[in-house]
Amino acid sequence: MRRRDLFSAVLTGAGTLSGLRVARAAAPQASRQKVAYHLSDLDKVNFVLGNIKNHFEGTGGNVEITLVVHGPALAAFRSKGMSAAISGRFAGLVRQGLQAHACANTMQGMDISLADLLDGFHAADKGGVVKLAELQSQGYAYLRP
Image (tube, rainbow, N blue to C red; front, side, top):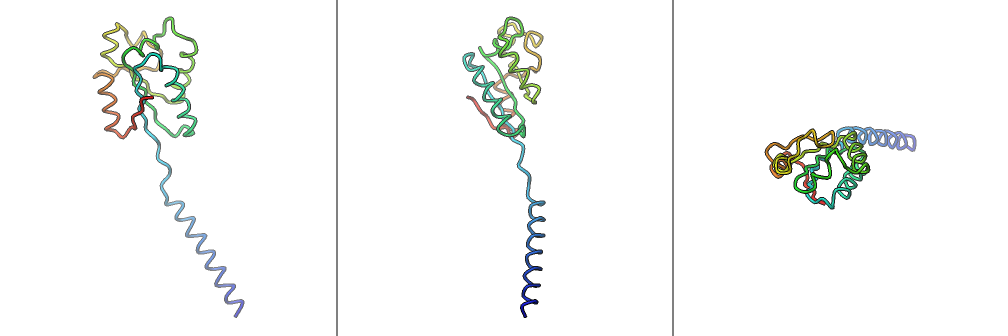
């Protein structure tokens, strides 16, 4: 009687372990975050770049981050006469996958072209706020630090 009970327990345990493996394989993987950072305040440029760096690190890179810049903050990203710290930090984030968009309305108002900005920027042709709304409609979380 004991052998039969032991054999039954072993078979039950093996079936449970097999079932757990199947359940783990079928479980969805953590979905990749999609986040849109909104930056318009010149005095928050370093702070926002730091937040983005922390976001990449905190997710292990399992995130799509888009930065939309308009208003006074755009001046901080001019390639001429800019801070080496901001330039280096921004370039590192672009290498990690950051997508940066500059508001076309702000560019026009400040007489800035894409060529005047750091490498990695794209123009938000319809405007920065329109780009942010589009990103939100595509499932991006909106953050304005």
